Amino acid sequence: MNEDRSLYPEHDENGKPIIDLESHKFLKLWQGPQHPGITGNMSLELTVSGDEIVESKTHVGYLHRGFEKLLERRLFVQCMPTSIRLCVAEPDPNEYIVSTAVEELGGIEIPDNAKWLRMLSLEMARLQVLLRGVPGQAGTFALGLGYQWGNYLRDLILDSFEELTGGRVYHMYIIPGGVRGNLPEGFKGRMLEKLKLIDEFVVKIDKLIFQNVVFESRAKGLGHIPKEWVDKYGVYGPAARASGVMRDVRKTNPYLNYDQLDFEPHVTTEGDVYARSVVRYNDLQMTVDMIRQILDKMPDGGDIRAQTPNVLHWKIPKGETYVKCESSRGEYGMYFVTDGSDKPRRAHLKGPSYTHANALLDKLLINANIADTAAIMVSLATCPPEIER
Image (cartoon, rainbow, N blue to C red; front, side, top):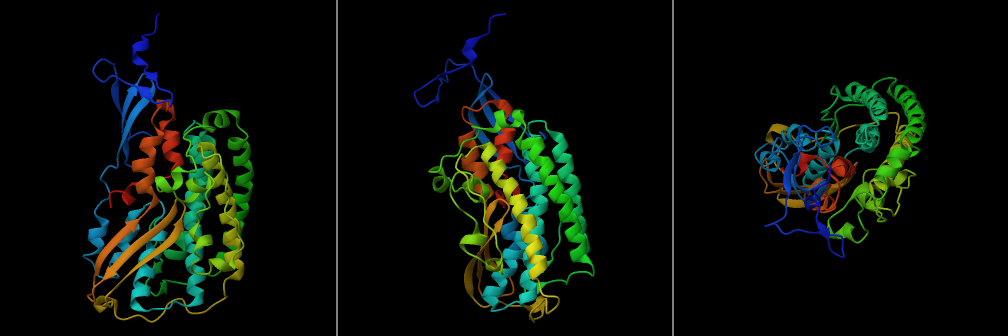
């Protein structure tokens, strides 16, 4: 059977398809939101020629939206259960940026013990994301065994969150003034035992994924982000470090007690799906080590909260601030404005998903094969509520 080559476009010297929209045959396809390789409730409107993508448009789903305006209509204490919905997979950075913004504008200094407990919560949040995300990247190429291993170990970290905060997914542990509680008795020992299991998992995942010829051949060279695109497209976190640009707020602009930890984020230059997977794999190992350091350096006791006004009648002086931290996806910030009332005047989130999924993803998918769409998308680690916020 002769193949109809009219479905495949010619390409110019830069590799861009030459399409005559009036005479050429092309097709529109939707990938997601039901597709297992799609992030959350997002979907992609793809224009394809044969099995090659000519154009991509991101649709974020509109499931979680309007959170910035919701924050502006709530008391400061009521902002906490609202803000965590800005990223369901990793809610703890939202707790931190909102609480810290309130503290900066309200002139509140939190106890040192609370700083260590906040760091523990933030790194535990990063760990559970990476336990699912690192094997999840390979899972887009049907290597599902590692994904199941990662989900099991992630559940163990969620068990620890439940023990510490009472909640598995949403925690509301970091609050204005400090944290809600101290470590339960025996928590450190139980966490260290779980970290030993993760050490064993790290070795297995290296053999299953990074020594796997299928994953290597599919991922290398795919979804390449040149170094010069990092600033142009607003690339942050692991995606930026995989393209040779060191970006980690914990290192470049230390907050809490991160300057007391010994860590060095991994940087490589290849800039493809494989490189982004390697960077996150190293982040996984580094996070385990950082949690051990936090547990070792943490005070045995001490205050966990500063004294704050009555939360139902708390008015913050007029002012504005920008607070940022390092999420598993990169720089995560909140611009916060107060007008002297009991509610924020303006709350504006800056998350890497907005630029990664809206501008960068649509660019990376041009000329890609349909079969590689999910892998490229997952490698950018987007969180849809950050976009339609």
